Image (cartoon, rainbow, N blue to C red; front, side):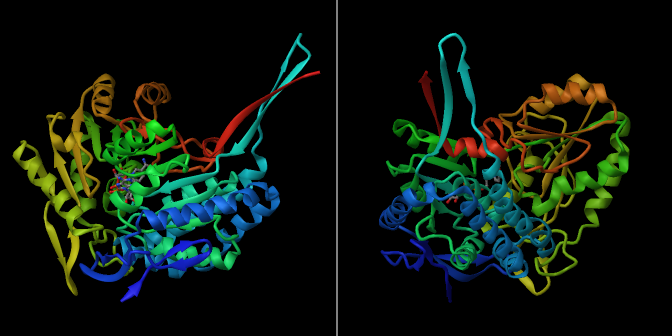
Length: 480
Ligand code: NAD
């Protein structure tokens, strides 16, 4: 059986305690590799390698640091096919998606921060009347921790690592234990790219062992985390007494507000994507769909037809639109919400059942599901399901749409479909979300601030926001 190893001090290492975890291929429901369940000793070894590498890496000239990151970016692109296939097998997502989105974006993450680090500037303030000048030194923090989830494995892993390294930190990183493969392949790429020893260390393992050792480590002074809200709360509680700097990108329950005056066809095809792309396992998916009553019935008919036409199949099949869900337990959790919806008075308009894919009978497949609800206080409208399940509900006025959009504990993103400029601005301003798309979805410019409000997290990633997070500002005041 293939084994995945930790990457510590520039070398592949087995876990010290020889503990291994089964890694499943969700398209067939079978174990296909093993990964380390790293202990506190492995994490300590990774920390020590990172600590030793820090002085040199943090003083490496920017152009040199930039070259290292660019080299990783180009090697990811050169290995696109291998990485995309590995991601599809490990996660269950369609190969078409990992080839067009996940892996190109992982490369862009490194390329973007290779450039951004050369443009990052800090402020100066002249204290007029006092013959003094203040300027801000932005210094790297030291050894930082990066922890990522399973839904966009390499995409989100690199979204943290790239700015952390660009800012001059050294890193102890942990990918999700459910999708470790591309992080392992990234380590191979780092060796080929000539990343200096100890600058990046990748430790694999469970959240409550390996992850816990990272967040508890007293000398890892910043944690960038993407994952569930409950885990984020636990990390915040653990890290607070040590005054760690935290960036927490957490769950979502994003509203999709559709007004009768929108560009209907564009809205319909984009809504299909924002509902079911990656089996609905994207934190930005619009899982609550609110439609103005004037077009509600038409939308319902067309949306059901388009959803029923999606092809559910094996990830590596070129025809597949909807692949496998990431794990058996996640599949069962998502399905349980469909049962809860029925019990709470929702109407299943399409989907709702497990799917058996020929030749892949033990894989984790579920039909894309649309549930009509009128009571937006029910659990399917309030809790993050994180699967191919959306709710649809009509509304009669802008205020009603806004009230329903904001009536959840989350505040990650929102999509608004309207050609009325005043309405789009009013809605965008008042909706409680960190990211608002008008007449589009998931259009990402890597310079923009990315993150959520309310229970969707604290802090922002992206562009200079990420470089600010991964540096400590120091004010220096000189009187002359
Ligand atoms: P999760 O919280 O279970 O796990 C995320 C990571 O945290 C994994 O690597 C896991 O091993 C680790 N972890 C778990 N317990 C830990 C602990 N005690 N200490 C340290 N690390 C620990 O989340 P998941 O199921 O992997 O991912 C799905 C969630 O991620 C969803 O809620 C989704 O909305 C969210 N997400 C958010 C964003 C965003 O940008 N806001 C993006 C993608 C996914």
